Length: 182
Image (tube, rainbow, N blue to C red):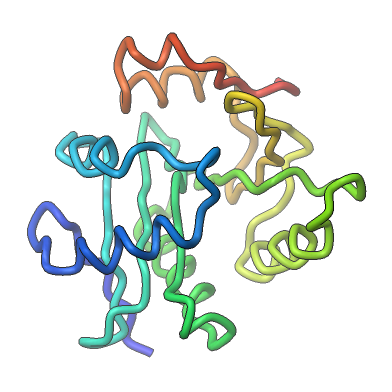
C-alpha cells in the first residue's frame, strides 16, 4: 500500500466522496454539519485529509491539533474497502505524521447495555490493533458517551476543552463536551 494523506486545503477533488462517506459512516447524533468541518479545515490547527492508496480514493481523516495533542475527530474508510487493511494503514500514516504527539480518539462507549455491543467491541479491537490503548477515560458530547483511546498518554479535560475551543471558538461553550474521568 502507498497511503497518501492529501489535505483538502490543497486539493478539494474528493470532497463529494468524503461527504457521502461522512453521512453514511456516522449517525446523525455524532455528526457536525459538514459545512462546519469544511470551514474548520481552513484553520492552521486542523487537517482534513482525503486518503488515497496511490491514486485510489479510500477514505478520510479529520484531525484537530493543539499543543502536543492531535485528536482524530472523524475517520472513515469507504464501505467497499473495509476489512482490507486500509483503516489500519491510514492510522499508521497518521501516527507517523503526528509522531511525538499525543494522538487520541473517541469511540462509542463499550458497554453490554447497547444493542450494537459487538460492533463496539470490534471497533475497540480494531483501534487496539492499530496501536491505540484505552485511557480509562470517558468523554461526553451532548448525550453520547465515548471511551477515549490514545497513543502517547491521557488527555486532561482542560486540554480537551482548549483543543475544542481552538477548533470551534466561543460557540463550543454552548455544547456539552467534556472528559468525565479527568
